[in-house]
Length: 396
Image (tube, rainbow, N blue to C red; front, side, top):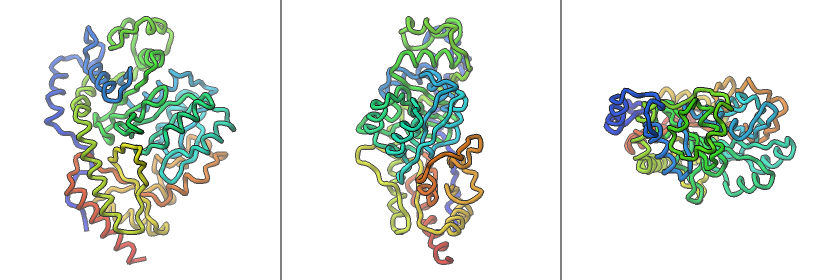
């Protein structure tokens, strides 16, 4: 009982990217600052991202984690700072906070996998933290109006980790554009696959130029960025440390044609997700998260809550993996999942008060739905999934 022989690894539409990559190679200039004007492929990608998410500035860097780090540094996070983060996120998020020398403060989540806004207020009051690094984990958005209101009420600086949420919208406004800065990922398992890479967006010229210099702009290279607000940039010449986390032109060349086609890609993967969930919904022990009508989702992965006991959940994971469905699971002992806060051994969580996070994740399975899958492939996967689940249930 296996799915068809399919590749679950992220794939590229080579017809779309080959021309762009060959252009980059033909220039013989892979370093973004080799161009004498602001027309490098990294600049072009940055301008395309600005146009798509409607931000004033964008900066391409080597990873989303480094973009988060730069954003935190640019807004003033220091060694004595406390940064609020949802307890459900990827291990790189608290790591970026630690890279600044700051302290991550974990905030509980609710059963829709987003930050618990009541606990957020409690943690703001009890810790006196002044920064919120809000992860939209797996593209799930909370009520962004309420988040912005809470941040204004307590003078909290909001940065959005929208690594999983490029294209996701709240009331028509892009995730990643509600705070002082937002971050998107171009890693292979994200909507745009450039292998690695990240983009920082902001409407704040101070945050942008600080990030430009810290990313690795030295001497007069700042003049090779698209923004003409060089009077602001000149304040920071030789004033900030340089971390050399620049994006190169080859990475940008791979990403550019994908952002041109991003809306059709979103339509396709959302159609796949809807079909996948329709088929699995026929089993009443399966539960998908509720979608707010205010959110335009981008569902390139599925979070599936399954009402089984612990031993059967572990059995189900094993059987699905054996059936060529590489599903992961947030519960279970000896789980090494990097998205489970209890596995972040580099953090002291002994005093963390998180009554709901583990409970809300312990029945949840996590499955990527790669962008190259056809609707036929999705249907086949869903039907095999149900057959495996039925077998596990019958053997209980």
